[in-house]
Image 1 (cartoon, helix red, strand yellow):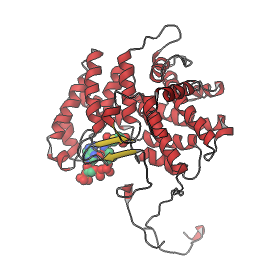
Image 2 (cartoon, rainbow, N blue to C red):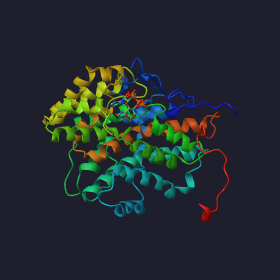
Image 3 (cartoon, rainbow, N blue to C red):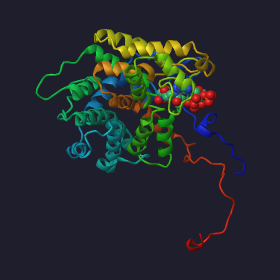
Amino acid sequence: TGYVTLDTGFVNTASCTSAITYIDGDAGILRYRGYPIDQLAGKASFLETSYLLIYGELPTADQLAEFDSRVRKHTLLHEEMRQFFGGFPRDAHPMAVLSSAVSALSTFYQDALDPFNPEDVEISTVRLLAKVPTIASYAYKKSIGQPMLYPDNNLGYVENFLRMTFGVPTEDYEIDPVVAQVLDMLLVLHADHEQNCSTSTVRLVGSSHANLFASVSAGVNALFGPLHGGANEAVLTMLNGIHANGGDVNAFVERVKKKEPGVKLMGFGHRVYKNYDPRAAIVKQAARDVLERTGGNDPLLELAMKLEEIALADDFFISRKLYPNVDFYTGLIYKAMGFPTKMFTVLFALGRLPGWIAQWREMINDPATKIGRPRQLYTGSPERAFVPITER
Ligand code: CMC
């Protein structure tokens, strides 16, 4: 026990063994259960990918149909839970609403929370996958003062989410198949990423044998931060800021290079990818396609492409191996689809959900798992004698 190594940020420390996701940061490789991301994106649906991550194999058509119908049966929220949304302030950030609502699921399903009962874990898995899109769309509806729509279980996973988000009860909602298809693909790209900050959080919380909902709500909070999932929102805020200041991309890059406090090139850099982020390449192409389709020649896309071009040719970024990550272009796509900036990180959470679940299940079933309990190197005062308050 006497020997403790310091690894701030866990740069070199593996916290577990895992058979779910493989990343080679130098080669720009990402695989789920052995399948390269570029073979899954656009070919496997999000639910199919969720099945793969959670159960370890691609489903047969029958297995997928059965899984899909189980998920569809659980999309409704408890009526009492719907009332939660009325209690949050109108301008509440939907990530805060999402984490609160996921945490609240523990209060509604108290009879099925045992981490070591496979039936409980299975029903919690399905409930989470089914209810998070409903919660996410309700958080949005609340923020714009529109009534919440009940799910329509005749619709597919993403289509149902789009309708609950953008539909109104007084009109039929026409789903744009291209928007649905691209959103589905973006969810696949986000579905897992081995031991990132939020997934590590889910595992750490779960290692104390907290239930799946409690663990995942902690993961949502970890994802909220701008260095992690919140980066997709931060990229748009950055691009809007540059645009409002006259679009001087070079001036912004100079501020980044001077390391002004709080000024970073958001959407750039990654702890593991030091060559390129294979997700970013797919997203960049999708951004072009969606923006062309929606007819919006968003000036922010031009700014983003210019920023990327300048950064990729600049020694500051080259020497630090900083490349665009998955978040650099996703915000522009979400914006073109009609999502407000505040919803971007919620979409990331929707995508990462099967990864959190798969990792939590792997953790709980791994006999080698111990409670996560890092050590520290103490730097405080040596022992000293207490001084009564009257003598201080
Ligand atoms: N802009 C400017 N400088 C940067 C950036 C950036 N985006 N990222 C890293 N650097 C610099 C950093 O200042 C450091 O410089 P120096 O060696 O002179 O001190 C060097 O590059 C190494 O960076 P680091 O902070 O030690 O790297 P890290 O592995 O601890 O951090 C990161 C990784 C993703 C948090 C960081 O690159 C970052 O803050 N990027 C911006 C936020 C972002 O886009 N996050 C999304 C990540 S991908 C999706 C996800 O995981 O959610």
